Length: 433
Image (cartoon, rainbow, N blue to C red):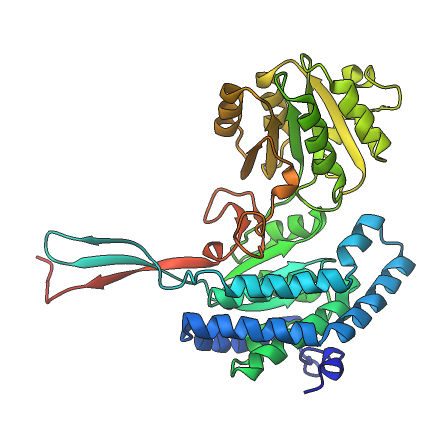
């Protein structure tokens, strides 16, 4: 099959006069049928399918990059921000990374069938709690075309079918990536409907997905605050998500000055448009090198907005408003506050963190342990950049997102986060008195 030709085709056509609800129901039924096929596959068969998909992605590289170039040009014409364009843009290296990530998922242990616990009751009943796929997962996302491959790989490896609804800004990229991925699956006998992409950008389809209880088993939104807020407000299907990535780095009084500077620079400026980027820097009043950290950030091209004490460190720091402490900038903008010790830092984090990722830089082991134990975020770090908040960096392979809630899964959601469990009971004729 010619991958370049396939990549430009719509993933599956909507029927004439088909309502958004009917479209979602049809796609969901097809996905659920494909999921029953996935549920029968062995570990080796699923891994081989993902390797075939990775090979197909590499083979379709020219078509995928051409499709992405069309999206980038359209994004520039629409006035997308630099951060949004960075998330959208693919090049040869990023595309290789996408294919490599699919192969890495293939190499991960299969969670399906793992026995979480096993017990035997006094009456001889043998009970096992076993991991199983969730079923059909709907993923609603913006900008990042790599999500198409990452989500497809993670869902397939964990035995789930997936219904993808990407943003209009990455329309051509998503179609090209999905087409190549589907070609790889079909080459080893897996139905392409295991990985579906909604064929229309009609916003009403999002609403239909959110209310498709009984057809879609879980929704994962990945995108801006307005998208996630809408999903969380309107969904009648369980949602796994984080709303904001308001990540803090606290430079403790006992921090090594050079480490503090390098961690702060990396946490903010490595990539400003990702959810793990630092958005607020907290400087201890007793830290002796605060001015050096501030200077390094400003000279790297970052705009700083600070409280009065922070502004006294450098005249180039702009005044921060109340809204700055609760803003996910996703850009080279950073809020800075000076705090009176560990308790004040943790109080600030408790008041303003989105419970995504918060970090401390310190050489004081006792302070580090208090921070780890008392900060209530999905990811808490010591002496490391918050940009490590990523499933791949955690050794989980590609992630489907970061969850900041307290139920089911928290932090980077990879294979285990895409499974549930069931109880298996084995008896020998027992009856209950």
